[in-house]
Amino acid sequence: MSDCPSCASGPGLPFGHKDGFSLLTCETCELTYVDPMPTTAELAEFYREYYKTRQYRGKLDAKVRRARRRIRRLKRGLTGSRFIDVGCNVGFAVEAARQSGFQAKGIDIDEVAIDEARTLFPGCRFEHTSVETLASSGQRYDVVYCSEVIEHLPNLAIFLEAIRRLISDDGLAFITTPDLGHRSIRRDPYADDFIRPPEHLLYFTRRSIERVMRGHGFTRVRFQHSFKPTLKVLAR
Ligand SMILES: [Zn+2]
Image: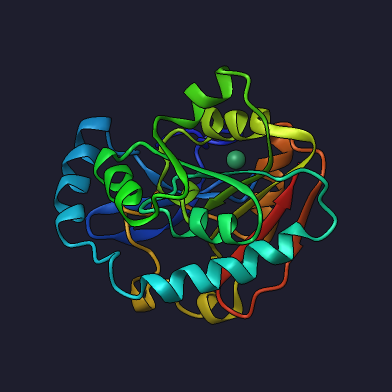
């Protein structure tokens, strides 16, 4: 059994099993994680199949509208206007940010998604790169937006460190991820395919994501209320 991928405490307690994968919950930070983590090659194979079935073109306008509501809410109290979407997929949140008055850019490690984003939203900037590479370039952003990404990551520590480095002095990170601790999920986390390795490798609650983020150098961690089982984290 593996140590916690966030805080490196010894092997967690058994959480359960799904589709041949085991899950553990860290006793220290309460993160629930797939054990063992799939290899890079296994994940590449999984996503090759996964992307054949994705349907991101559907409801694109609705997605832009929903993201615009979220982003306008984030804009209150901010001074700067540099926006980056980390893991932007086909770019609907980047377009929403542009429509909300930001200098909007999106990055993704999926080249096909970036090509699609450039076609769909020619008014925005997109780059096929990793968050680690962008962070080492020294660029900083006033909003670092990262929606439904961290639950997919086998290397959370490196990713969060890079996210933190991208935030400007007065900026913030806005991170969303499914909420394992939501009352509608706690009853039966296996219902409705909520637990779904290897697509989702990490499962957070309010408490665990706060501990994980503080453990990776974020000093201020707040939550926006959500009716749905989604954690909406504001951090810097
Ligand atoms: Zn831990």
